[in-house]
Length: 112
Image (cartoon, rainbow, N blue to C red; front, side, top):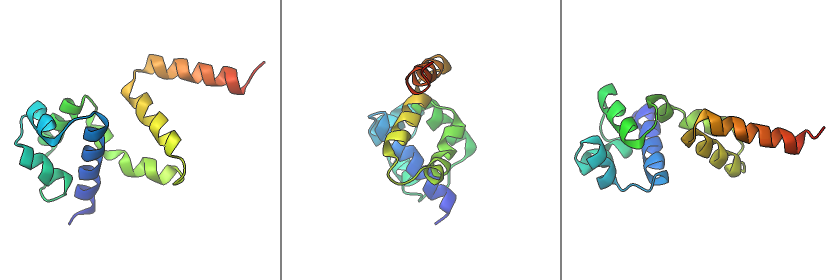
């Protein structure tokens, strides 16, 4: 099995679950058969860039986010789950919310 297929499949599964979607729901939103989603998540099928784009749109994310899973894990220690959750939540929000949170953190951690 290809490592890239495993990583992308795991990332799709994690994002799908984070959105609260079943494989059937993601399949319907992206225009695929539910078994195809299962094959992708288990790295049993190669996936085209067009199909990655359809899945990303169904998950309401950018295609690049399907490839960020491993990099995030490498940058964080195993016990930094809270940081991973914060990063994921920020990615779900817009830049305005990210700036607001940064400003709040600056106020808390760098009081004048």
